[in-house]
Length: 238
Image 1: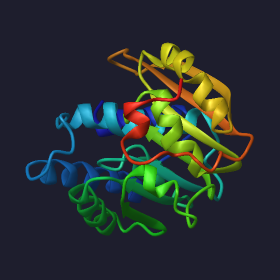
Image 2: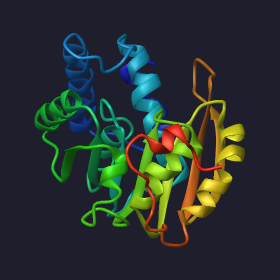
Image 3: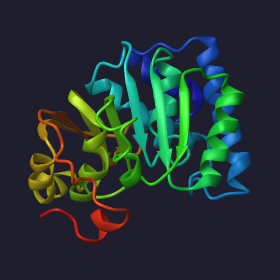
Image 4: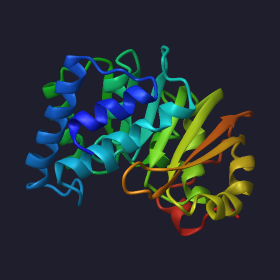
């Protein structure tokens, strides 16, 4: 998917990019490739692949949930800024907070935000488990997103504590979403969530399967969650 096809594909979904936004995606791509030579951000570096498998793929969340309003998003384990920075470019009014456990990636994100002239973005070097315990952030976000971070039974414990009541957790998944949802349903309920929808579709051109899982926060998360760093992954809630 070249940049022109990317613009057209988004337009078909009701998202029209202006010249500034197109330029931002171009700068994003160049900065990503440049920094990728110094630190490992992505295995995908060809322009057409980055536009399809990263940029377009990230924005699919907006096809299934209305982001065209003032919302505060927390992106857990965003790595190179996925999915929140492509969403921020498309919907500039969003307020974005990213938490990532690797300082080098936070360095990249700070540089990227500067290059893209983004406002209302904040980046934190922390483990999601610790971040979710922090009173400043716990249960304060309208939306928490995660893409390619962990399986649902683990991911729910990292993300749901950050979602405010009646907010949503949006998990971006591949072909394994259904089995992950079965394994993670107890964790989702225990942590105060309720699965609202699971949207499955195929990425254009390459036809690989993707899923967007939308979980609404119905109840407060019990105080003991998230457990200490490493525990959710080692001993997922069953």
